[in-house]
Length: 323
Image 1 (cartoon, rainbow, N blue to C red):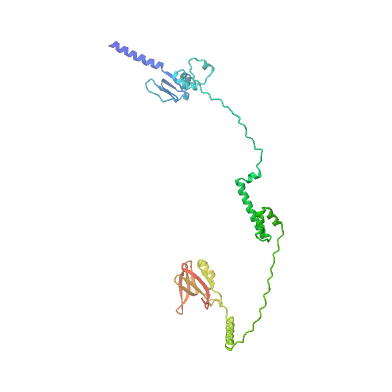
Image 2 (image 1 turned 120 degrees about the vertical axis):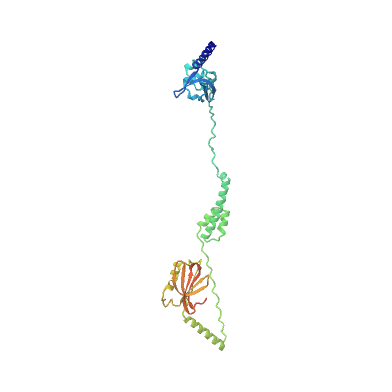
């Protein structure tokens, strides 16, 4: 029994030593090494199985050194991936155990010289350009402009307004130039015949009553002419004028005086509001929002406060002015 245990121990030790001895080492470009057996070989890289039975992360092929890639190229599983990254040389091509797959070659680029279309030798003709869509549009615009220019020349040269446009419609571009080169026509002045003299009719004899009515009418006209003239009424309406404090102080400056002058003594200011009309002899005070006027009420003067927003109309009129 003791001999059997010894034999098993020696067998396990030999197997472990053999596994550690036969595990290969692979060098990386960063200077480190990986020791183990190939567990998975793919185009993305390789995974190793270490001595303790664990698997490493996948290493990409470009992480290994040139020497390690040559060792991979000797393995049939890894040769088809690592062999593509091996830098071939004369010595490596002579190595019998180096398996390098055939690398794909790009097909040669065949350059075909296509014949040049060349430049057109015939120029664009005028009729070809005029018969195109854009050419027809421009022709219509120029034709209408030609007629309009003839109409303006008719006014400028004093021609009848229909003759130059008709001529321009028949002979475009030439007729306007001809009429423009001609001198301006003189306008005919039609002398008005003097009206025939109307024979004066003999005035019929007036009666006594008609003579008295004519005298009274003459006297009334003379009295009206001798009476003093009443100045015209000035009217300022909301919408036509900005009825604010500055406007009223400018237009109604005479009504702010305590003692008006002789020319302004018979003038009144009529204020029309939403509450009614107020005929004032003087403006006592004004602010940005209110107007205080002095009115005659029951043969006595009184102050009336009127908001500026309620003003509809202001009239500066004579006391004897008729509505």
